[in-house]
Length: 460
Image (cartoon, rainbow, N blue to C red):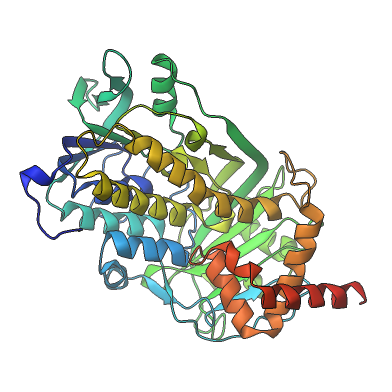
C-alpha cells in the first residue's frame, strides 16, 4: 500500500469496479485499493480457493513463463509476494544459470547466476495466490458468477456511471461506480461503450501469427535435464516454426509446451503429443528428458490467431473514469511471455497516477486519458520484441518494418555476441524480461561490438 492507512477524505471516490479477475484484473484491484472506499471485482467464473483452471481463462492450463518484469511489477503491487509464491510451491529459476537455452546456429550461452530470479508455477496457482493477497486488502470484494453485460454512462456519455451484470440465476443487477477498469480479454465492453456514447474508436495494429500450441503436465525422472531447471528450444526460422518449453511448476512437476503455426498443430493425444516433440523440435533434448516420464494431465490445446494493439493512447480524449488494461489494450503473442509483465507494469502506472491525482479537485477529468498515453508507451517495446521474430516468417500477416532485414541482422549479431560475453547475455536477458529498456542496447561500446560481430559473420 502507498501509505499504510486510509482515511475517508483521502479516497478519490466511493466505488471502483474491475471487470475480470484474471492477472490484469487482480493487479488493477491492488492498484485501486488505496484510492476507493470499495473495490468490487466482477468475474463470470465461480472462484475457488484451490489452484484450478477456470473456463474464463482459456489458456489457463497452458505453461506460462513468469518474466522478471512481471515478478518486479507484482512485488511492487504486493510487497513480499515473491515469498508468498515460494511458500505456495513456486520454483525459483535463475535465468542465467538454470535454463538451458537452445538457439539455432549459436554456441551455448554462458552460464552465470544473475542477480535476480523468477518464480515458476502454474497459472492457476499464480492467480489464487494473487487473489489471496487482494482479499487481504480489506476493501476489495469479489462477485463471482457475475457476467458483465454493459458499462453504463452518464446521460451525456462523458463519464461512466456503473456496470450492469447478470448472475448465474439470470438476474440482472447494476453496480454504480465512480471508476471502472475493463480487464476483460478483448475489451469488448469498453468498445461498446465508446460506440454507443459517440466516442471515437481506437485504431488497431494487428499481426497475424496463427499460433497453435499445447501443454501437458509431467513428472520427470530425477536428473532428466541434468543440472538445469528448464529447457527452451527455439526453431531455426523461417525454415522451422516449432518451439519447445519444458518448465518447472509446483509439486516437482513440469509443463511441456509445444508450439506450431498454421495447420501444424500439436496433437491432443498423449502419444502423438510426445511424437510431435520428437519429430518437430530442432534438438532431441526435451524428448529425451521425457523418457520414462509420467504424464499427469490431458493435453490442453490453444489457438492464438493474431497479436492486437488497440491504440487508446492515440485518442485525443477519453471518457472519465474508464480504463481498459492488459489484454483489453494489447494482446501479445503468448509464446514470448510478455503479456503478464506488461499488465503488471500498467497496473503500477495506474497506481502512481491515482496517487498523483489524489489532490485534484476533478481527479477523473483527465486521468484515464493520461493513463492510456502511458500505457501506449509501455506497450511499444514488448510489441517490437515480439513483432520482429514473428515477421521472420513470410506467412505472418501485417505491415512489416521497412528496416526488418537490417534489424534481424543486428539481432543475430547481438545474440552471437551474447554467447561469448556473459555481461552482454545478462543485459540482453534483462531487456527481454522487461527489466531494462531497449535503449540500453544503444550504448556506443555495445553498438561497436555488435557491428564488429556483423562484419565477422559476413565473412564466414
